[in-house]
Amino acid sequence: MIRSHLYSDHSGVDLLRLRSLLDRPELKRILQAVRVGLERGGAERVSIANPTEQERRALDELLGRRPSTGKRLGLPLQHLEDILQRANLAPDLRTAIASLGGPLRDLGAEREDRQRAWRQVFDRQDAEAKRLHAITGLDAVAWLAALEREGLLKRLAGRDPVRAETLLRQALSLDVKSRKIVRPL
Image (cartoon, rainbow, N blue to C red):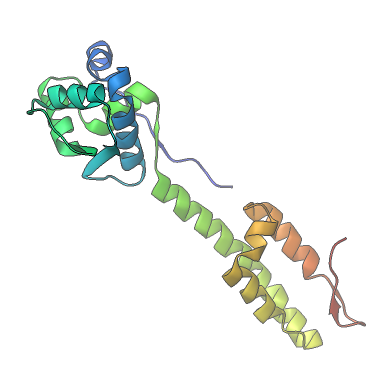
């Protein structure tokens, strides 16, 4: 089973002041970009394309910088974290963003869990494929490797490793007399 990786410690947050500073419609898109950057493993900078004048003004004022221009509106995350810490609003940026919008996911860890689950599916069925090859001469090992390499099993199983393992077990059931892989109906 793939677990969800969440970060959710909200200690040391002045939530009322934090909300009044950041929880505004004109900062919504840039804060969503911050969330995505943090969940993907921690970006140093995020940006949004085609900002409105209100979005641009709100972020420039928050950061205490001169009015910016351009087709993208950028935010160095360390700068925002420094502002939050100096104002005693949150101990760090991750905690602030989680306090405003719920726990942050660790997408890298979730991806690793998915990869591990798929690796286990193929590893567990590899022994059966080798057994079939020894008994029948059918190259079930190459077939299994092709399924993994081409991603067909993932697509057929709807990206569900449990369903994939069921499909593989069924496909690797062998009618030894006919020397054919029995396919599920």
